[in-house]
Image 1 (cartoon, rainbow, N blue to C red):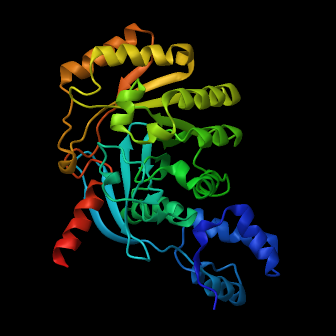
Image 2 (tube, rainbow, N blue to C red):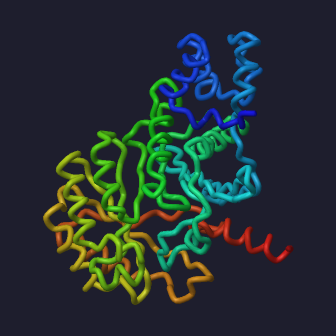
Image 3 (spheres, helix red, strand yellow):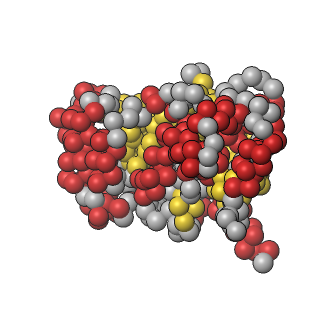
Length: 357
């Protein structure tokens, strides 16, 4: 018997192809797409312009979603962190953030993470598996369904692929996800309103450049030299800065699109003016297409070797970059009164489950 799969895992073209293979008219796929992403129904029986046989066929092969809400934390600033359970019992996080420009959702792409950044809560638990594109898409749909239910007539307008996991280590599913949420006949979330963040998988940065998407790219740099970056991010052993910068140069030449460099400030580790000047030198020849996002560190109990940089150090780093001609800013914090660090809620919940066992 065929195992049911999430219909959210199909791009519009893939769904159309499935309909044709099963002897159904192409326009039926368009109708289903409309029901899923415009009307946002959660049952095939609600797709009332499909005949009974078509609805039964869909129900036989597909499910509309597989995620189950475990925990929902709401912050005073409007940030909501969701903890979802997958069909295999694994847990993932998704975050809704409110900004002046709209509602942004941060999605997870893997169960756990193998990148091993020494400051990160996401990497406390090694990668169990990649998420399917359907599981990534459904995170957006779960948040949108929540917004629909509270009745504020709001919609998800922006997406950041910055949750648990390395998106480019789950490349094909991430690309399918992007094509689905960007589809103009569906959720229609503009490519320029979507940002994918990578820890620096150089070969995938090149692949992403060749996709010819308008989706934004962010690169987690966190240190301006190999010695310090390898200390903080073990991925630097595989993709040292020279290799990473060559891939970034290829991306810039191919797309002519700006890159954001993410830089978490760690007290007395990478937050000195010396590192700021080194970073400015590293980005000097690409500063017209670069933006540095300085991120105050959210402490994680398990990584107690790191502390948040002092305000004076953050300001000094910021001002040094500006003097060197580098566009930069300090990230506005969201959800500081809940489990703010990426992966923190998940790791806490899994520890609770372990303690109960």
